Length: 492
Image (cartoon, rainbow, N blue to C red; front, top):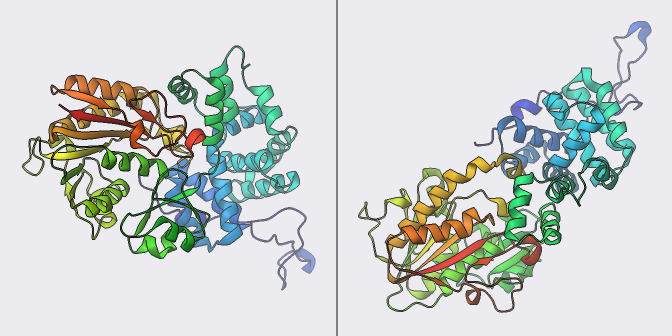
């Protein structure tokens, strides 16, 4: 669901500040005897912005990465204030499960029974107490002030809850509330590292049951990820781009640049299409398709699920160097427009249609393309560090319709590729049902001969932890990328 503009909500807040502050206005008082009533200065804007972002996520099903920039702009927050608001927003959303367990205990009632405005304010306050260097008295008083501005009758309750939260640090709360690691390791990791149990279990299974490595992955999921840029080949050199932005070339992708900070949209190379924002893992899997050896013609490439256009942009730049052309298919009109913007001036033709229509539409003929990318819609469990609210929205019930769609799209790709051609199946999820199960089932049902290509040699030499092949699973804690899965298939 799209993010609503938050201004309509926060503009109506009654903003106040901590008790005991001195009056900040002069002039006649309306109080008896002419005495001046203490007037509280406004609640600090970074905390208010963070509150509005968190509230919009829970109230409107907004996405933090879309709604927060609007709030920061409307509040006029930049620099350190914007960074603090961003840290509070994303930190609270990442640690939401653990914070809610702590607040339930501290409040003596299930957190679901606390009014939503108060609940979100308490979440922000608990995050400040347990995960930042904000002094306890400042975290408590600012949270009480925030509650006063959104639910004046709950200030006493908020004060009591926050003081109870402040009696323990984060480790002590986990020790009190988490089930024992010895008897319930999944439950322990879920509460300790703030992930739903079903996701922890899926990660553990994908990592071969290694609980220590699972814990390292969960820890990495709770860290703020760096911004990665893709220097489009033939348009800008990554070293040149790194020098321009004060960043560093990526560890693995030959096109990656790590951005130290700032707004990517303000970078000239991004604004004029020579570079774009893209996780290094996404760059690696798209480049792997282009790098795979191929016999015969190599001029017709297909991106079957192209929105919003990052991989299509990289493939288009690579195709331009090799005299190839890319057909980019996207079923949603607004996402197709994003693909068109992302691939302007590149040899990319954008089609607004369903990728499953291969063979049923003359624009998508069967056995026509040399290389096909299927960046399939998925749960997105591999990018939870970038979209922390997703871990609380996704449910196991999401898997059956998604995996059905994934199989259908991969089957369409195998129809679209010519004999001897290549298909790369990609998901931003390590869930084995979306990766190995989907690929093997789709290949089995396709009705065409299919061979798996070992994907490991298609990635840069020296990359650690790529497993036994032929597929590859990237990981945040191993590679510093999103958890991208890659399978490369050759049609017989």
